[in-house]
Amino acid sequence: MICKLLKISAAVCISIMLCSCARKEAEIQLSQLPEMFPDYAGVTVPSNIAPLNFMVKGAKSILLDISISSGETISFTGKESISIPQRRWEYILQQSQGKDIKFTVSVWNKKYPNGAKYNSFSVHVSKDKIDPWIVYRLTPPGYEGYKYMAIYERNLSSFTTLPIVENTQFHLGCVNCHSFADYHPNYFMFHARGTNGGTIIYANGKIEKHNIKKDSVMGASYNSWHPSGKYIAFSSNITRQSFYGHSRDKIEVYDLMSDLMIYDVNTRKVYIDDRFNDSINLETFPSFSPDGRYLYFCTSKIAKLPMEYNKLHYSIVRVPFNEDGSLGETFDTIYNARTEGGSALFPRVSPDGKFMLFTWAECGAFHLYHKEADLKMLDLTTNTQIPIDIINSNDVDSYHSWSSNGKWIVFSSKRVDSRYTRLFVTHWDGKQFTKPFIIPQENPKDDVLLLYSYNIPEFLREPVDISKDKMAKMFE
Image 1 (cartoon, rainbow, N blue to C red):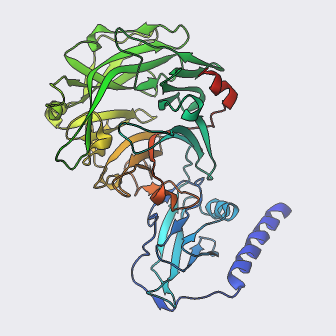
Image 2 (image 1 turned 180 degrees about the vertical axis):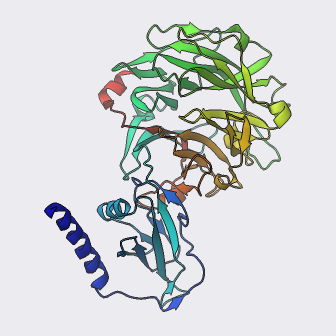
C-alpha cells in the first residue's frame, strides 16, 4: 500500500512540476486540427507502443499538452518536432488503457509568431497489446541494381532496431523472403542470393544453409512455415520485369513459371504434387492456415508475357494439408478472380481462422507496383467480403501480417509520398478496423527522408537471437 501511494505521489509531483513552471501560451485559438506528421488524430494504439513523436513543418516552437483520464495534463515542448520521453509515455499508456487521451498542440511559426492553439484530438489506448517485435527488410529504390540491403528487427515498444542479416556479410548479395513459424524466432528462414548464397534456415537450435532445387528451377522463392516448424511451403518462380512506356505504373513484374513444393526441414526432402506443377497454371504465394490444416495459395492461367500481363488474374485456392507433408485430394476456391474480378494475392488467415486478408489489384502478380492495390478481407465462415475501406488509400497498400492475438495488422503502403513503402498499423475488434497509423519513429523525419522501402513486415513474440559470427559462417 505504501509503495502504491509513493507511485501516485511521484506521478502527481511530475505533473505539478511540468504544469506549474512558467510556460508560453498561444495567443489565438484555431478551429482546425494541426498539420502534423505523422497524423495520429483519432487513431487507436496498443498499450505497449513506442512514443507517438511527430513534427510540424515550419514550426519554430511546439507545445504539446496530453490530458489523461485522471485529470492530469502532461506537457512537452520542442522546436520543429515533439519527442516524448520513454518513461513519461509509458506512464501515460499505463494510466490510459481502454481510455482516450487528448492531444492539444500549439505552434509558433512565421504565420503565428505569437502562437496558435489547434483543436484537440483524441487517441484511444487499447487494452489489446501488440507483439513486441517486428521484422522487415529495407530495400533501396533500384530495379536493376542495389548496394546495401538488410533484414532488421524493431522493438515496437521503443525505437530499438537491430540488423539480423546484412548483405555486407556476403559480397552485397540480395537478402529476401524472410518468414517465421507461428511468430517464433527459433523457426526462421530467408534467402541469400549471390556469391555463397542459399536458403538459410534456423530451426531446432541450428542454423544451416540449404540448397533447394526443383527440376530446372533454381531454388525456391515465396514461402510459408507450417506452424509445427516441420515443413515450409515454397513457390518456385521464374520472375521477369518490364518497364512501361506510358502508364501511371513504372514497372510490371511477372512470373514466366511458378509451381508449388513442400520442403521437409528435418529430412531436406522436397514434396511435389503434379496437380500444382504444370505448364498451364501459375501457382504462387503459399500460406498455411494458423492451425496447419490447410495450405492457401494463388493461381492464374498462364498468358503470353509480357504482352498479355493484363490477363493475369490470380484466384485464391485452399487445399487440405496432411501430417506427412502431402496435399489433400480436394481443393476449394476461396476467391474466384474470374467471377469477382481483379487479381488476389498474399492470403493471410487470422489466428482464429475466421477471416482472410489479401491484396487486390486489377491484374498481375506483384501489386507493390500497382497504384490501385488495396487490402480486402473475406469472412471465411460466410465467404463474404467485409468492407475495410478505412485502411486503404489512393496509393499502393500491399503486404500485410496479423499479430499473434489477431487484434492488429501491419501492412506496407506508399501513401506518404507515392514512392517508398512505409509500415502502418491498425486495430481489429472482430467487426471493423480503425484508422491506420504509421509505426512511430524516434525522429519523425526518418519517414520523410529515408530513401529505402520497408518490405515484408512480420510480427514476432521475441527477438531473433543469432550471433553475427554464426550468420557469417553461412556464407563462407
